[in-house]
Length: 455
Image (cartoon, rainbow, N blue to C red; front, side, top):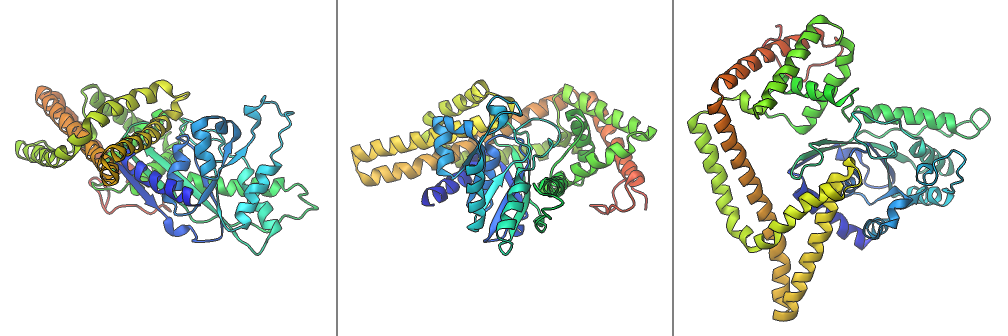
């Protein structure tokens, strides 16, 4: 599996470039050996298996719809990664009567687990943009039960894997990967009471879904998630990790339907929605209103950005003529060539990843051919380093642009900003008080006393 390990390392590097921040939780839940099924939610197309492959530490064979193997590039990539093609009715006529033979695919997945290796499955089936988990299919449970029946002495560990993206389509955004505690595979069902194993598969799938919901954010609509994310920002203390931010959002989305009928909750949610709308209308963010922008602090931030910009700029200039046009091309082609909205980030990532590998390889080869082996090796090292520096420079330029625009808006809209800050301060007190008032008695608070909390 040398090719796999090389691709795994490349994916690890490439995802660290594509995402500004990747936070990984629960690696200790993944056994170092033995059969493992990673069972994930599926919000971002091929980026989901790429992230798991890059950061789980195991060699993972994913079940993938067979139509993906028809693409020359994606098919080549999937074969190199040991993916197993699975035929789905929706891709082959769609009718329940469609005869699809997946015996070979299931046999291959069974053998992977019997050999003590890992399988990856997304039981929602399709990648999607919905605000909550889609109903889970029973395939993962059926595979685990079948392997357990064949070899009861070889445990299969079911690892629920939650993927939460922050601004999922955007380059240099953030993602949280959570590997949950293993779900136990029950003993083989009684053939007399459950001859085809469907009852056991549905029961195990229900356990998996409960675990997966505990690692993801689910709500009835994106508007609810948007407003409750605003509530979360008002409630949380500064410096929160991605894991705690997601856990806090999850708690709000679970608890809100239980208290939404209360008059004070309805009134507070309406005020938060109005605050978010006003803030968006003037082009500001909540973190800007959270603190006062003094001249000294602003100057210090500008100097810090400029210092890092000047540090990375000389190195980035080496490859800027190459990386600038390619970066712009990836940005626009990712939007135009994506077949669906949930594949935009995947298109950008794969387009950039494969193109840069090709370009770096060709240029290093040409330089080596013309100037000698060592010149080619130095070129192969210098181009990725220059690309990394270029990413840092673009990030600093974007941060400076945002800081300058924020300053202009703050000083141009002083009255509106002052009113928003006053509204925010009052909302913080009211949100904390409402959370303290309506928090279930059996739910432990995540933080100590907050402004407005009863003592």
